[in-house]
Image (cartoon, rainbow, N blue to C red; front, side):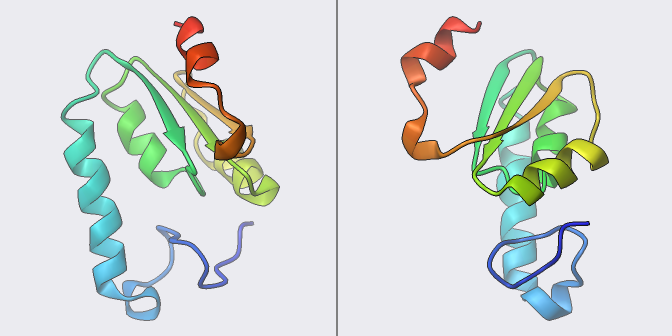
Length: 104
């Protein structure tokens, strides 16, 4: 289980604890982005516990999710197991966009 420390947004934490504004900001951001990813391959950097990435995967062709926190990646992998959703541990500072584009 991935625990809430207050450092990052977790979808399963009561908005009363983390702040309703933070909760809605995250959900609206990804709901907005989801309308543009239909049939596309998506790279979600700093994907956290995967809830928002899972929303994108409902519309996208494929979503690769990268987060630096090993516990977040493990939790996301265990929670969201769609065939078009992949979770990897890594730093956004070490991502080569050119190499990522070659995947597709």
